[in-house]
Image (cartoon, rainbow, N blue to C red; front, side):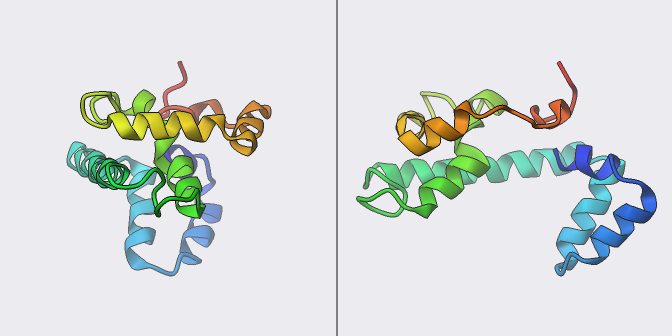
Length: 137
């Protein structure tokens, strides 16, 4: 998805924005995204998502929420960055065989009144950002 954003900016605007990123590694990631990630880069990013999901699954074996017995910002953060879409975007990772507790947790998240209200809002997302590849279906 970062590639869709990076390629959507004019060269001068892109360089100005990248110059403001404090971490060298993040600047390089954005520059690479502009030209396209290699299969090795994509495989490594997918591996990292798997590691995160596995950690969440392990935690949910112990507690009902990510930081313990109560719903916290940790749940909101993971849901918004990965947990909400992992089953759809990475079916090889977000499935009942690999992470059943994570999928149940995601349903509990969707059932929370505030989350449900947010998910009912109009989706103004660029259609190219709604998929992992950036290809509009």
